[in-house]
Image (tube, rainbow, N blue to C red; front, side, top):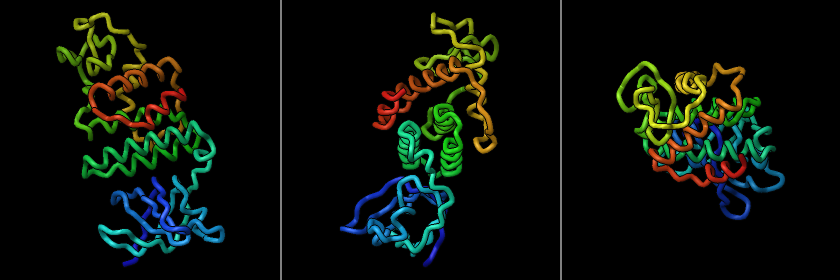
Length: 239
């Protein structure tokens, strides 16, 4: 059966001397595809089957088996990302995180994933985009944030700060000498969760607020998700 899949190549595996297998992330999940002769210099697939190529892939589809590639219509080669080690590191992390969560849910993460990649390709701040995705993914990991009230007493008023170790918002009555973040940090954390990534055109966030949100999420992920991702550790070393 011939089928067309829109997707992003998230992995390449050598197959024989001249071919390779690609893992394509699609709305239907991750699909394995054999690309015959793709490593040959004269092959039309050589440039169109590189990791992090976004396109439409026509394949001889075999359910639960490796499919065979027929043709590729590239939508976006993501060349800005591929030519920048920092951007590439963010995408590697975002991809590894997404792959881990795909294993734990039947829900499709494809739309948020591809929208995030395209926004980074367009030049939007990769840290902010990744943080937005991290917040949205917490629900799938079963440790979603309470963005409405204090994590200790449940109060919805007098929210003073956020703390990764304690797991969210802290009101003035439950404050125990935690670092007090900017008031914008508290407001934007909620905005990150609810925003439609596709609608973002500009990001005007101070470095202070940007860094406070990222620090909170780093601590929260380390404490509550149980995930250990090599790409995240590499990214931290670059920052």
